[in-house]
Length: 293
Image 1 (cartoon, rainbow, N blue to C red):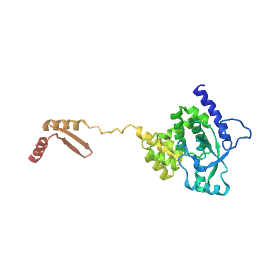
Image 2 (cartoon, rainbow, N blue to C red):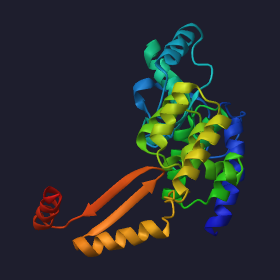
Image 3 (tube, rainbow, N blue to C red):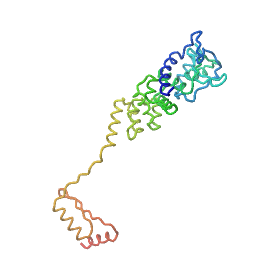
Image 4 (cartoon, rainbow, N blue to C red):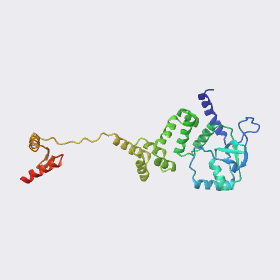
């Protein structure tokens, strides 16, 4: 089976897996790659190092932990087996973290027998559908699938149910410098603000202006466009007033008599006389001539 065909089939299958992810299998389902719900010791479950989600709000975790103490875990954590009695989280790390805060000894899980690529896809799709990822985490997840598993932007669009342009715009955020990416991750900048800064000469400075003034995305786009235009504008041409023939003739006469370059800038009834010298001997000669008068 070709890689492209495999990806297309997997993309279609992901929707089904996500749809049933938090539901136990019907009794009597004989598919060997999917197991029914079970409860396992929480210490036997570990986070995936490739989970695209990196940021977990501490106050929200405490709120969820309080709910879990009262009602338990309503949605099981989706995992895959890594070794005997050991599991790695595919989806539900937030629930797992909150369960630890709540002091749970065991947690309910749904086990999915999937490879690394599918596990990463499931984690991204689950988080994107729940809007749990910040824009930077989403972009890093897409980049990871492209780098490690050879997906195209079209492939990703089909898998996650987004347009190719959405994927492309997300990936553009990775071109931003680290300080701007930090602002994006913490939520002080939106994805719309950040995208406007990608092609600007100094996105860090502009990001600070946008956040300090509470600018809208449209205003941020205008600010970015103005800076790009200023960067690409040709340098201003210095316009000098044309000298009349008498002034030019006088410059030449003085230059010949002194043996030094002379410039006269005359406007109205006043002006400047500039005598250029290259050595101290020439300067001394100018001083001698002036003192002789």
